[in-house]
Length: 270
Image 1 (spheres, helix red, strand yellow):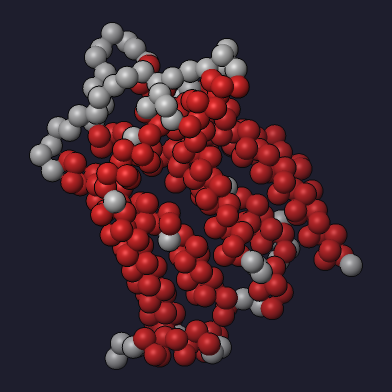
Image 2: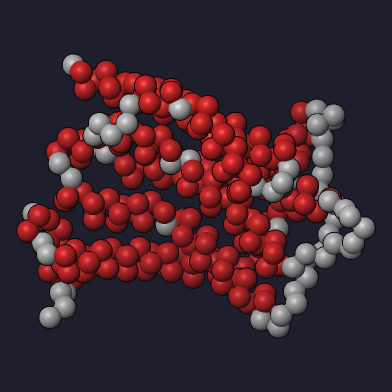
């Protein structure tokens, strides 16, 4: 018989080692359902705020009065730049509605990410040793802050440079991007950045349980730098400046992760 919600909650409070594989799957299913429910609830609110979401948030980086352009131009006229004027079009009858649903879901997920991390932590916590639980203390808060920092960095830094480069690139053809294409790029500029900003948390956890150390990370520093450049080229447009903008913070996070691993190693020796 399938487990009901009461049984699932009891299993979460009990010894996970006594749970069967199917019981683990059932528990995971409820965590996913609750995470999706939270995402959908927020997505409904985003869907209803259509005018603000699109005119201010989604289409903001394509406008010359966007925050990033005003700050850079106010700081230095030599560094000042603006995106070219372009009009978004739709090719399919239902494209605007589908894009509206897509944007609502992704923004709902971004806003619900602390709760999603919380549900993930509730699922993995019963299977951890006490040492691993102590190492992951503050998991939800730190992961959420890093994720939001990555998304904001992608929105205010990567997106303006990426949009300006892509919209300005000219090979003699008329540029008429679709709304769906624009939203896909905005998603690519923000969500992956939020994910890769989790690097310090991953290193902290692995170092705490002894799977990685600062020596190894220092030894493969050059390899990590090349990997960061490759990753930056994947999640950003083929623009050197934009790739450096994402590579710099990622490499900084890698160096911070080395410091974190060193402190954990020193702590474990005491």
